[in-house]
Amino acid sequence: MKAWIFLICILLPYDQPASRLASNENKNTSNEQHRQKEVVVFIYHRFGDNKYPSTNVSVADFDGHMNYLKTNRFMVLSFGQAINYITDPGIPFHTKVACITVDDAFKSFFDNGYPILKKYDFTASLFVNSETIGGGSFMNWEEIKIVADAGIEIGNHTHSHDYYLNIPIAQRHEKFTEEVKKCQEIIIKQVGVTPVVFAYPFGEFDAEMKNIIKTMGFKAAAAQFSGVMYDTDRFAIPRFPMTGSTANLKSFSEKSTMKALRILSKTPDSPFLSEKNPPSLTLVADTTNADLSRMSCFITQSCSSVTDGNIIKITAKNPLSSRRTNYTITAPDKNGRGWYWYTHQWVIPEIKE
Image (cartoon, rainbow, N blue to C red; front, side):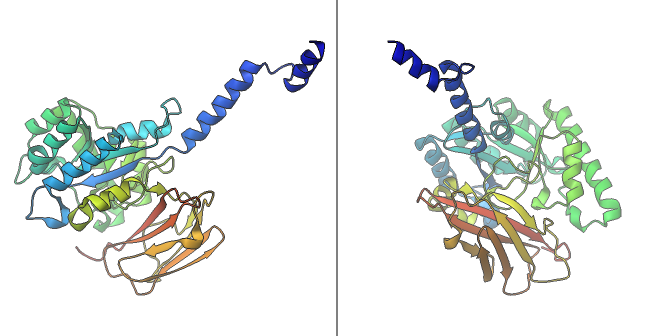
């Protein structure tokens, strides 16, 4: 018996009882799981509105998306809830988390999209640009209040949904601030809620616009380039668009299993081109699990890519000619457990859509 007591004293330091060691181990596991938290965010605009195929998802496809999430036991969150999940260590880790966001508050959401969310008992975030509400093909304030009262999160999408990057920089940020404030005031008055999340119109922003949203007290802002949310820049959250040909169930299910290719640094950080077109992008990636030796590069045109360890350099083979162009890279998991995704978006404000 004395020998056993001696052995136990060696294995357990006198100031670390077994219960504390177990607690530390659980804490370390919990911290690691918190760092691994990710959310796949989807963006929709119109539902069952065939007049606008580039921003539309069919009712059947949207129902298929929600059925897939339900069948595969995803935790479905609003945008604000997703930010809380990512940032709060006290919220337990979940292996499959998705977020549904809807921009512009078209009436087709109320008529066709919202009933499907109710069918599956899912929430979502609706980003409202206040100037258009009640007109044309947009929801009215009564409809927005109905969905808000039912648990749909209402977010700020500015008042006029302008192309802010086309406003001279001397006036841009003042107007942007005014329009965010105006939208906020109108939503509070009409709906009785204070939005805490924001989405950039057309997904376009500059560094000062991000800072304005942060300073105004919003908890996060959504962009429109694709990718997976994790605990990084909360004021440029990526979202996978679900429209037209990208809205089929195969594409949706593939995106729902994507992981974030975590970027340690990138050059340049800005979405704007310098004098060089096509621009080059240099990334330093976290390669703990991603196999960059089998990386693929995607642009709306052909591209060339070079990897050196965890350094990735990407350049389009031809000058960019669209207002917004995405440099996207994917890489498989080293152990065959899925794929990693990252996108950098370039914006050329001089090009009109």
